[in-house]
Image (cartoon, rainbow, N blue to C red):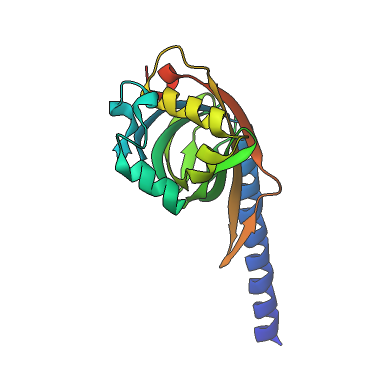
Length: 206
């Protein structure tokens, strides 16, 4: 009986500690949702292997000059990769943190990128700030050929290349933190949604 009672006590303590760990993660994730997210720059922007930021004007990017673009249009595969740097500022009095999160980035209400960040992100309370680089990979074919996104995507590429007098791009970032419970993963209820207007100066870090 003593062994059984000891086992029950240990099990109860483990359950309490597990619940405390989940509550702590929920508190930190909620604080993350209360943080301010700001896209500060973009780099390593490549479209079909072409460095967008080396172009004087995105309009110079045409199939006649760049055969890989022509080939991509035929094969319906135009790889786009970039890294967006996001500053997270925590105005709350609680630590904001998460070990893993899923993200989606939308342009003109169409999904542009999605992925996961498998690293701990911590933002100190009381105005603490941290910068998180987000790597992006997508097939730009649909974005270039779809009437709903072509204009918005062209403006985004112009902003990323630093082209002047370009209409600002509006990006929607959706973040879903993942909580850890032992070997199980629990998704945070709903998404943290950030809408931001970005210009060529912001995306080039000026």
